[in-house]
Image 1 (cartoon, rainbow, N blue to C red):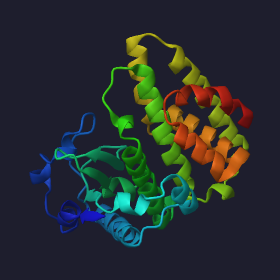
Image 2 (image 1 turned 180 degrees about the vertical axis):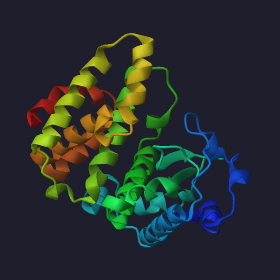
Image 3 (image 1 turned 180 degrees about the horizontal axis):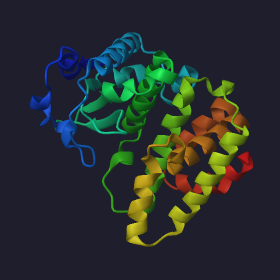
Image 4 (image 1 turned 30 degrees about the vertical axis):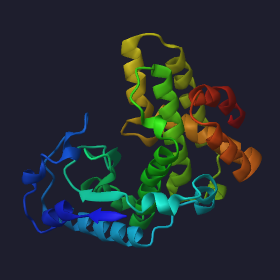
Amino acid sequence: MIIDSEIVEKYLAGDGIDKYKDKWYYKIDGIGYKMPNYNYENRKKVEKCYYALINELKDFVPCNVSIWDSIFPNWKRIIVNVKVNLIVGFPEPYDAVTEKDPDGITNIIFDMSQWAQYMDNNDIRDIACNLITHELCHVCIENIIPEIMCDTDDYIRKLDSATFNEGFAHLLSYEASDIDDVNWNEDKLKSVSEKSCNVMKKALSTRDKIEQDMYLKNAVCGSNYYDKFACMCGMFYLAKSYEEGGLKQLKEVFDRGYKGFAGRTVNNIAALN
């Protein structure tokens, strides 16, 4: 991976970063630039996050590496040319974003000031492993299935793509834990899966353009992790597939692809409940 930490290093030195606000990633639709908090306490938190992330990136091993080896057999080759931008200046809740730059190169953008908010109640190493695994999972999926990122006006295809892409990324990074160590049938997760499934059913059935736009946004965005219904539906469907057939079945689900995936999660997720 190629690491560009110029912006966060300027911030940590106490320098203003407004001169960078015309960078392409601050112009991503729906995100933009927000002046960061420059107070000393916040900068010290950002500094800890920064060094933790650098250490994770140096010798990166993803969460659930055995699954990566199965569904992304060439993952080490795929990620070697990915550019990782360490910045501040994104608004909440954009802590990590994967996008292609104007030259078509895959970039991951990590906002260290967003990460600093997680420090009080979490191990920063777990946060780093979680978010790096999540974003590089997107990179691998989009390398293997490039059409998943194609522009389209097809609402269902967009929903399928988001549910598949985010489902795998959330599953493989969930709580920076091994998939076998998660109790996927605990009451809290069963409640989330049921709620998400109900929203997905409504999303799949609506023909109203305004409602479709709302569902596409809520599918993957939100301040509450468990409210992102497409992410949750995908994750729980994949967890069920793994429980039923292990790596072999999970690989089969991946190889089947994203078309029709959102509907499949609704048809099968009830078995977890």
